[in-house]
Image (cartoon, rainbow, N blue to C red; front, side, top):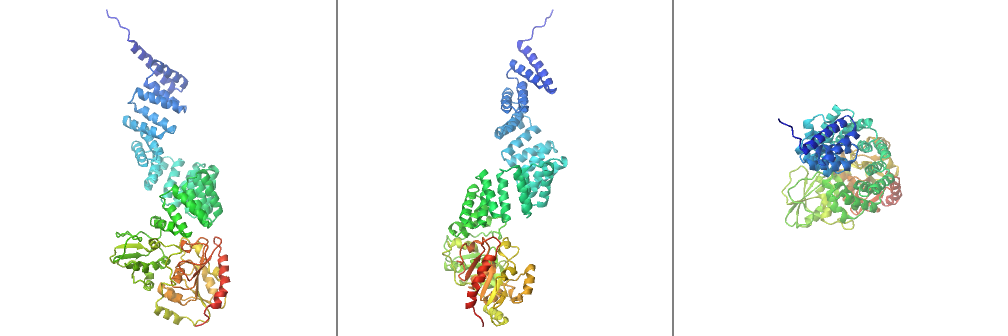
Length: 639
C-alpha cells in the first residue's frame, strides 16, 4: 500500500504564496486596492524577495505618487529578478516622474535589451529628450513608430527632436501625421507652428499657433512664439499685445519679457524697451538675450557706455554669439573705441544677412601683420558704393608698403577710382582677377593700419571727377548767378536703415531759403511721394542724364559750391572730393560718423548736423538754416 508523503515545507509555503498572489491580482483587477495591497504584503511576509509582490507594490505606490517608495520597491524587485525588463521600464518611469532623467535612462537602456517594448522605447526617448540628447531621442521615438506608426505622442515627440536637430521638413511631417490621427492635440499644432516659424513660413506658423490656442488657451510660451511670428510679419502692435497676453499668464517669464523688450524697441518705444529688459534680468540675470535687448535700447537712446556694458554682459552669457559680438564691436566703433571695435568688426562675415558674401579666396587674408614688399595684394570692395568710396583711401597707403595693389570695385565706380593716387590696377567686380598673393576687404584696412579717430588717412581730397566730363557738365549749366547747392534727401529705399536716414524733400526744403540759391538735385531715384514737391519747386534743377553713373555724378558734384545730404554714397563722394558737404544724420548714425561732434575725421570738408530725437529732423534742419546765412555771405555769386 502506497501512502502520500507530506510536501516539503517550502512547497507548502509556495502554494500559500501562489494563492495569496492569485487573490492579490484578482483584487487589483477589481479595483479593491487596499485588499490587493494587504495580500501582496502578506506575500512579502512569507518571502521578502518575491518579485511579483515587490513589483506590484511598486506599481501601486507609483499610482499613488509615492515615488521614492515606488523606486525602492522596483529596485528590490530587480534585485530579486535582474532579468525582468518590465521592472526596469517601471523603474525608469518612476525616476522620470521624480525628476531623475539620468537614472531613468539607465533603467530604460536595460529594459530595451531585456524586453524591447513600446513602453520601454518611449520611456527611453522621453529620458533622452529631458537630457537634450536630440539624435538619440529621435531614434528612440522612431523605434516606437516602427511598431506603432499611429502612436500620436511618439509622433509629436519625434517632431520635437527633429525640430531641435533642424530637420524641419521631418518635424512638419511628424506633427501633420499626429494631427491627422488626433486633430484635437494642442501640442501637435504648437510644435507645427514652431517648425514652420523656423522655416520662415510665417503665415502658416501663425495659423498653427492659432489652432493650438483655440484648443488650449493658457499656453504662455506658445503665445510668446505667436508674438515672435507677428513681430517677423512686421505686425508690431499685435505682437506687443500678444506678448502682454503671455505675461498675464506668466508674469515672470524672462524670455517673454526680453522678447517684448525687443518688440518695444522696434516700435521706437525705447524707454519701455529698457524697462522690460531690466524686468527680464531681475528674473534671470544671466539671460544673454535680455542683456542684448537692454544694450539695443540704450544704444537707441545714445547711452553708449551703458550700451557697451550691456553688450559685454551679453557676450559673457553668449561668448560665441555672432550678433552679440557684432553689437559690441559696432557700438565700440560708434563710441570711438576702435581698438575694441575694429577686431570685433571682423565678425561681420559670419553675421546672417550681412550685405556681402565671403569671397572664399585660397590666398591668405592680410591684416597688416606680414611684409608686402614685392607681393601683389587684392583689395576688394564690400557692402555699398559709399563704403568703397570711404575706404579706398587706404589703397595708396598699401602701395607705400611696397605692394602691387589690385583694387576691385563695383562696376559703377571703376572710372572714378582711376583718379585715386598710388597706381592701383583698378578692375570691376566680375572681370577676371589677375594673380595675387594676399587679399584684404576694404573695410578691414582700418584694422590693418590700426586706425583711430585721431589717426586715420584724411586728405583734403583723394578722388576727382574726370576733367573732360567736368568740362562737359560745366558747359551745360547756366552761368553761376547764385551759389549752387546740391541736394540729396533720401537714399536707397531698400536699405535696412532707410526709415531713419531719409526724409521727404518737403521736410528738407522747409529749412532752406526759397531765393538767392541755385538748387540741383543730386539723386537719381525720386520717390513718388516727392514728385509733387519737385513739381512745385522748379528752382530745383534736375539733370537726369548727368546722374546715370558715378563719373557723371562726380562731374556734376564738382560744380557745386555746397552739398546738403543725408547719409548716402553722395555724402562720401562729396567728402572724398573735398567738396563742402553738410551731412544730416539720424539720432544714432552709422559708426563712421561717431557721436557728439560737428566735424568728421574722415572728411575735413564735411560738417555734421545731428538729430537730437529719433525721427525728428527739426533740430538739425534748424541748425542748417542758422548756418546758411554765414555760408552764403562767403559763397561764390557768379562765374
